Length: 236
Image (tube, rainbow, N blue to C red; front, top):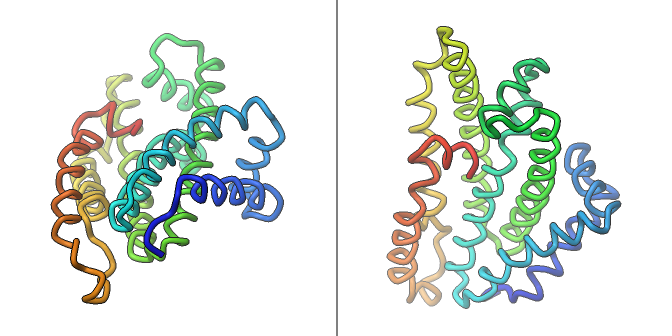
């Protein structure tokens, strides 16, 4: 497979959403069901995802397309991080409202929760699709790295939120000292994902390897802001 066309990218993505809505794992099935059961919401997701896949479809080199799909996975992962953190860390309703205020300012907590849930559905569904497309492209190394990055980023993001809540309340946070290390671990994995760490190919297929690596490094430099500031790091 040389590369995936825009039409194929969207066809496979829609298939993933509809199939997962009927027989996926519990969290993923719930996400996709909420999309397909609401035509307006599904149309919003489709338009958003289609813009992303159009960029990927314009890349006619397999390696470049894989790196763009990896980028899509990580950015959508960032977009879904807040809801996943609130769910996985079992925060109280009070802590949830305080966390939402950190990101949405003076917005009513209930309104913020609705907005963030909508953002989560869009991001999580697109992450699921991009992950499936990487599997279709045979990028097993990318899938492994992204799995490790998702776990590392979740740990970093959870510590960050706890630190932010404690700082707002002017309380001491014992886990704050772990924040730099957690961020460094996540940053190193992100560099490998976006920096061109690809599966080795046969000698007949590696003529453009140097070009692809240099292009990947340029994309990586342009995306370092994803973990360089608090807002960018937490929201992707």
